[in-house]
Image (cartoon, rainbow, N blue to C red):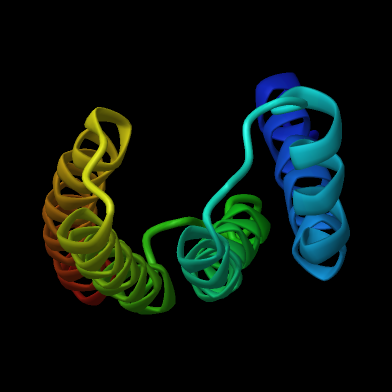
Length: 152
């Protein structure tokens, strides 16, 4: 069976996101310097802010890359059938990673409160809850499919 066009586009977009994210994570110290010199030109970041932001971004990038990697593995299961327990476990892991990201952003809110940081915190909490809900739905569909396979 031929893979639908949307699935192929999504799969390639996930590969691209992972590669760009990995390169961005590896070059983050240099990119932060370029950001300060080109975009912020006259604005000087305080040493305390810079000392916090670089490790924070490096720590946050790892769960983000892991989420994209889990999504790539889930996309690979579509041709064989997406309703498998491996995808349920992946969605639970993604939900946990979103809550880890929310916790990291809560720490950032305690140190340097911005509206965008607060928004990202709430967004990650919502994404984590959505991921857990989707995992429960797919788990139930796996159970129904297994029962259906046994009755045939």
